[in-house]
Image (cartoon, rainbow, N blue to C red; front, side, top):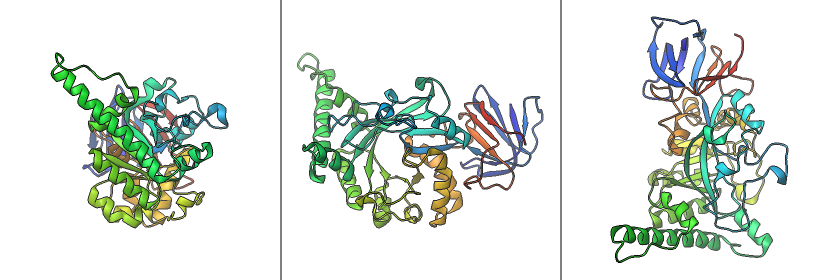
Length: 390
């Protein structure tokens, strides 16, 4: 299949191709060119000078793990019977038949990171998935890292249980304890593998096993933080254990944007279009994403679905533009930037040869972030998931 006569926003070094075409075979982009292709098959699509973009990526959601229209029955987000649960995997709690997957697809959102919740200081493993499919195993792009949480959420949950952790000190201590145990576990495993005649392997520990990829920097540590002081605690812990941190929410990131830039720590900003629903969000400002970007922080925009319905991800980026973010950068916060932060940029996030054919097409002159905008075409892995007459 070829899509031609399109204004292609590649979101990579190729920039914008004013009049271009893209070839797709077996779910993969096989060629991108300028002008009119030499051969146009019967299955090809004339974009009629429309805007061709990579599919949008929501960098932080609870899509399908908190199901739409259900209460406890569909909420598999927080295993709050234990404050430290790195062994929990979001992929085991996602219902791909949740109707919000369809709502995401229809708005051009082709991938999403699905995360455990923030009830626990450590909630479990985050996964990145495509938004089309019937079996989550077939939709999985990769596992991205482990979710940690600082601040008000764990405090409230365990204060209600009248057990630790009930303070910010205790939350950090619980995380440190788990990471120290894992570091020792890794050391003992290395000793056994290097000299099995003199060392015994440590007793199997599923929590340590789950954290090993983070300690080995094969995966990232995603810290739920709103307040600036909690963000600094995340930095402190990350430095102590030489792990790669990502800040989720970063509501008060603008207060320390220069520090985040100096430490080269990315921030997944959001939810953007919400109220200040709890004390640690009283510093919420629309300027946050713009201030972070201005100081050199890599940013992505998220909905935190179900906090904000996932179909309003583009509107969230538009709100960040209103707060001072450059429009082109706003597009990047939904495409290549979240892909790079999540570690899935080899598959998605830009239009380039060899990448998955995840893309969307808008009519000529339309703002893809506008509330009233809808894509004419949405393709995921080369499959047409949405096609409107145009």
